[in-house]
Amino acid sequence: MLQIAVLISGGGSNLQCLIDTMKDSGEKEFSICTVISDREASGLKRAEKAGIETHLVDRKIGRPKLSEEINRILSGKADYIILAGFLSILEESFIEQWMGKIINIHPSLLPDFGGKGMYGMHVHEAVIQAGAEVSGCTVHFVDKGIDTGEIINQMSISVDRSWDAVRLQKEVLKLEHKLLPQTVHLLCEKGINL
Ligand code: GAR
Image 1: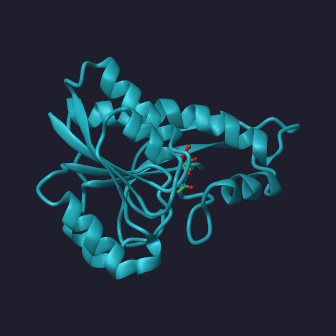
Image 2: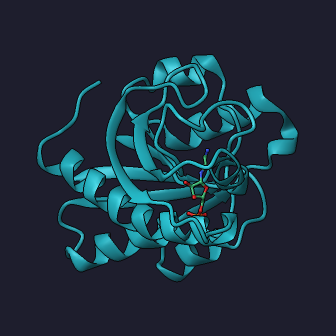
């Protein structure tokens, strides 16, 4: 059974989906071994409620120490790391060490609307501003760039002209909640290699 660590920075609705999937499958496919947040985040409560070990590693300690501390927590414990709304940038040495084992979910159809500063609502605002007719979400391996790693899985949605960024975020989040568990299932069933 795969041991999965989930890293968050916010509300953790994607984390909740993974918790529900894990419980629904009788914890046979994968187990969430730990949840780490880089700030006080309400998502940590979701993990605590599910009886999962949690860690708060404050991003204010700086990028090198943050990566070092996360590595210390995860070493020998996690098979895969899922970034589910985790907003800190990890050190290159950390990425190298975990290459092919870190997966991120991003709220657009990468490579569109990815890169520095493109996270959360900023992504949806940019999509609306660009007048894009289609958006969606992407699950990809993490490499040393920002949102540049190899794409594993995507889901798309037509953007209604009447939607604003808030509505788009809501619709894309619904897709994320399907895409992420589906991808983890693929990982467990077939194994996905970089
Ligand atoms: C999700 O929309 C996720 O795709 C996004 O943060 C949100 C977290 O929501 N991630 C990024 O923008 C990363 N670039 P959640 O805390 O409710 O799961």
